Each structure stands twice: as C-alpha cells, then as structure tokens.
Image (cartoon, rainbow, N blue to C red):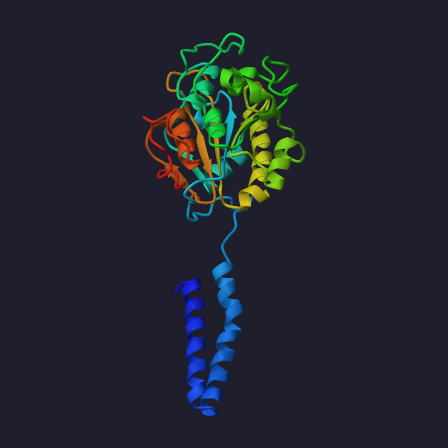
Length: 329
C-alpha cells in the first residue's frame, strides 16, 4: 500500500474506532484505546515513509525518478572540438563518470564545421548560411532563437561566459571567443544582452555559482568555458577537471536538489572530420543511471528537446525529434 493510502486508511480506522466506542463504553473504549494508540504511534513512521524520497546530489545526480511535465531550468555546457571517443576514458575521468552515472548518446553529431554555425544551429535551428567564425559585426541575425523564445514566455535566459572581459562582449579577447557566445549575434537581443550575457565566475564564487546557490537560476542557461577549459586550446584532462568541478557545484546546489533541472553537456564539433560525431551527456534526477540514448541525433534534437522540457513553442526545431523519451527526461 502506498504511503498516502496508508495514511487515509489510518484516518478511516480511527473514525470507526471512535464510533464503536459510543455503543460499548468500557470494552469498546479499551479496545479503541489500544487500537488507536497502536495506530497513532505508527503515524510518524507512515508519514516518514511517504515523505522519504531520494534527493539528487553530487554523488547521485541521476536517480530515475518521475520526470516533471516541464522543467524549471535547462543548462547547456558546450565544450570544443573533440570527437566522442576522445573525451571518455583515462584522460577524462569526470566526463566518463557522469556519463555512466547518468546518460549518454550512442550516435550524436554536430551539424557542420567550423564552430560558429554549430552554435547558431544549436540556438536557432538553422546555420543561417554561416560558414565561418567571424564576429557579430559581420553577422546580424534576425529571427527567433532559444533566447528570444524564453524571453517571450516571460522567463529569463542567461549566457555565462568564462573570461569574458565585459558583459555581452562582441569581440574576442584573450581566452574569450565571441564565436562561442551565440546570443551576441541575434539582433533581437541587443537591448537585453548586457543584462543576460554575463561573466561566469568560478564554481565557488561569481554570478552563476550564486544563482545556483540561491535558487535564482534562469530558465535557460548556456555555459561557455574559455578557450583552455573548453578543450579547444588545452588538453582533454584540463577540460575534464573544469567540467568535474562545475558539475559538482551544479548537482550539489539547492537548484538541482529541487528536481526540476536538466543539464546537457556536448561538444560543438569534432576534430574536423566528416563524421562529426560528438558526445552528448544528459544529467537530470529523472535519468536512469547508465542510460544509453540509441538512435542518430544532432544538435537540432537538443534544441527541440529544450523547447519541450521548458514548455516552449516548438518553432525552432519542429521537424526534429525530442530526446525526452530516449533520455528518460
């Protein structure tokens, strides 16, 4: 019997005892006293059993619990230029561990080369004909994006970019690459970019860590590592350590513990091959540990899935399948 049903049965039982005692004052009163005492003593245990639900944590981020109809938060972490096979194994223990403890794709692909058109396709459903990595000054993109859809639903979005020198920086600087920050390319976001395109900070301090800790994370979050930590210029091991630290911060946060946050980790493209197969990792309390997502999917499917999870109109990637069922989301 489920916990709630047991509590209901207890209430009914106590009412019956009360009615019986009215007819036989002494024997019934004694029996009622014994039964009531026994059942009342079980109330804390019944309520505790009903209330004890495994909470997600950094040690057990994926539990296979019931998925919500819609999620409060979706986080994307986009790494750089590595094929799926190269970011698992000895060189990437944190990545390998989270893929095993949660879920990962078996056949997931970027849509093209180089970086920028992948980021634009990820966030709008189209490359808009872009075939290069030039700055927003060369590409003024109209139309909708995942950012504008979230804003239209009266919720917040944010890009947290590591090493970005100023909010909504529209030119590369040091280890910050603007081509990895797609919100800066959409003309409809010009007025809100400076309040939503922010410096990331570290896993222990800064705007993103604070939002996770205080439960103020936007509905949609894109995390943009710098050119070293995203594995573009530095080793897989370096990126893996960075990813491991941030995943610990995310999955141990108040926000994640609430059970309505999904995290996707992927790479924008592989190391420039025609196959362009990259890894996609799915992290959410509803994901069953060890999930393997079968079937061929691309960045457009991730966009469609995000629309689905956040309850947004499926206008950007309407012809692409959602990963929701395949990923147990």
